Image 1 (tube, rainbow, N blue to C red):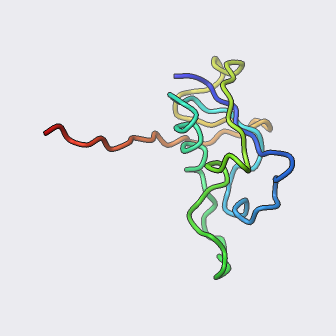
Image 2 (cartoon, one colour):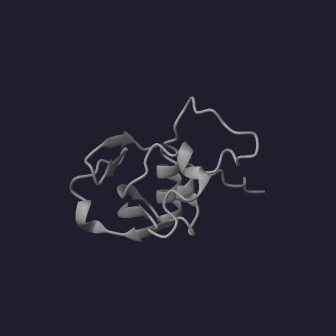
Length: 107
């Protein structure tokens, strides 16, 4: 596992309505096997109970979109992050869901 730093891109931060659903909206670090898994783990932390305007896209986190966020390998927090958590730049800690991809069965 590696430590990844994810952060909103300055040019798009908060301009996209998807940020309404993200619980984490600041730079954060997470342990993951690869950048895709890191994005999915941070994306799994969503706000609940938000009113959803009819025309708004639902179910997609800004953390999954490379136009809205960046994800880079950053081992500076390796000794501070537990495998099961996300740490934000403000020091908040969230439970990071493990992402398990289904693999096709062998024939």
